[in-house]
Every structure is written in C-alpha cells, then in structure tokens.
Image (cartoon, rainbow, N blue to C red; front, side, top):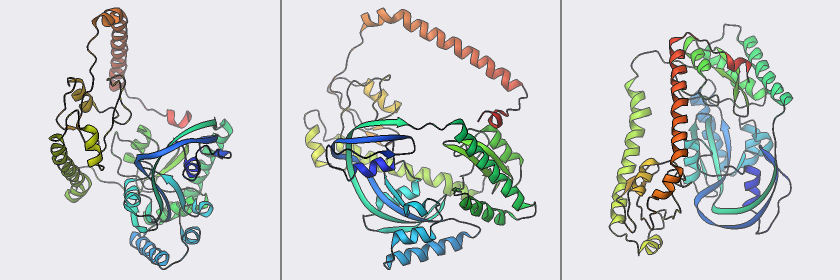
Length: 412
C-alpha cells in the first residue's frame, strides 16, 4: 500500500476536507487532505501482533506463542504484552501495532488470518517464515479515498548508505567472532537471531532458493546464490544491497542434489496446485451459471443480485493501454479483442479468476491512421530487431566465456 501506515491511520479516522499534520513516512514528508471517501471493493485491516521467533526449538516457540494467546484471551493487555514479550524489534516503539493494510502487504499466512478474522478477535499462533504470530484484529473497512497530497521525497544520502553498509559489515564481524568455527548450526541460528535483536534488526528465514532463482530482498543475485550452493552451513555472506538498505545472509539448511522428497513435493507443489485448480473449477461453475443470466440490458440488475461478485466497467481498453484492475492478463485481453459490439463472452480464465465480458463498443481498424504512422512503426520495429540482435550476440559471447561477476561487492 503506497500511502504508508501513518497516512492510512490518518485517513481512516479523518472527516471530509480534513488536513493532516506533517506525516513522516518511509518514503517522504507529506501533508494529506481528504477530499472524499466511499465504500470500495478491497478490504483493509487494522491489526497488531506479537511475534515469537523460531529460535533453535520450533516446538518451544509454538508453546510460548500458545501461552501468550491464553493470556490475552484471559484479559491481559495486548499492547503491554507486545512490548514485554514480542520478538519483533519494532514492538518496543509501536506496541505491536501494524496499522492499516490490504491484500499483498503481508505474507500470505498472516494476511489470510487477518482477512478471515473479525474485529476484536485474536488469531494464532499463525506460522509464517518469521516465526509464530498472535494477531489482534482491531478493525476492518472497505473505504476508498480521494486525496490531495503535498510531499517531499526522502532520499538516502551517501553517508546514510555507508552507515547502513558498515552496520551490516560489523554484524558479520560479530557473528564470525562468536562462531569461532566450533558452534553447531542450531547454536549459530540462536546467535544470529539474538545478535539481530541487539542491533535492532529483524531476522527472517527465506524459502528454498534454487540455482538461477531469486533471493528474497536481494532478487536475482547470482553471486549470492552461487555462494549458497558452494558453501556449507553457517557460512555468512554480505553486506548485500537489498531494497531499502543492506542485508546479511547465512546458510541455515541445504538440500542435496537429486530427486526431491515426495512428501515435500506433495505439500509444497502438488497440493497448492490442486487446491488452486479446485478453486478455479468452483469459480467456473459459478461463472457458467451467471453467464446464462447475462445480457447487455440486465447487467446492472445482476450486480445488485450478486453482491459477492465484482462488476466493473473499463473504458478505452487496448493492449497498449491495459486496465489497472485487470493487469497484463493477455488471456482476458485476447477475449476482449475478439468480441463484437453487444456480445457477451463465455467465461474467460484469467490469473485472478474468471471474467464474463460484455463489449459495449468496439472501435474498428483505422486504415488511414495506420498508413500515416506506417513509417514510424517500421522504424520502431527495425530498431527493436537491431537491439535484439546485438543483445543476442552479447549473450552468446557471455555463455561461451568464463566470467566471474563481483560487481555487487563494489557497486552498492
């Protein structure tokens, strides 16, 4: 969510035409005026949490989280407990409060628990890559806002970047000093988490990273992935330039080369695929039922009868000008481009669900406009092909060469 926590906190409590005081968000200094608000489609949640890291003993961490859940359900103050026991470093200053957020802002397990919870309820322990969470759902809303905003972006100076890089380098030195080459992986993991808290940093575990894959935070960092593949447990890598600063990575687990374990494939790959397909099968059945009721004249009446479905309009669609709510979903656009005026499409499977589309108006091909632009189009296509040929030639040379790329160590 682009507005940031403090801006959303203001908007959800503001009256029309209210103007905020100075808001200092992560990206800018800003002042916001609320011009208008209305009920929308997206659900926003205001939540707080208490985090317990996994540490060396996952079962003990879960038991600790369960005990905390019992305490808050028995009436203990959630905010005070967050300050006392949460292992999220920010809890000391924000009482565990996460503010307002919507889908896509949190990891899926946490997001699902918040979206499915009711205001005033507690959820947990919820397991994510960060640890176990006890969640308090404080409020929910579907408000959409129209705002005016004055802001001055905050850009990190060279000195700020160097301070962050040095802090990451100091962290590595402290870890290496503590390891001494003799500690087991579980002990090192405890030290890593403990030292991170001392530095007021947040330690998290990444999902499995494969050769050629992306590393959370660092993206497609070939050197980091190569380091992970070639080195053993407990080895540290960094500082690595990540979004918003620098990261330090430690190898905590490795899977041997060869065929995957069947159970891990079943739970990590096959089960989610089957669940997703089942959801799409159910959506297709509902879409077919709705399709039989739709025509161009009753679209609005069906909207009132089916409030759980999303009915929307899009204006002046083209491949070059996609609709922000659909995104770059080529299956949907292909179906749109093949419709005639007044025609209702069959259910079209997109990335987010099934679409039923009515073409209100279709602009025909303008041959005169094409002929006027033909020369420019040819130049653009020729230039694109030339650039592609050069890039293919360079890539071919790279593939045939033995190159060691250390740019990430020097150009951060």
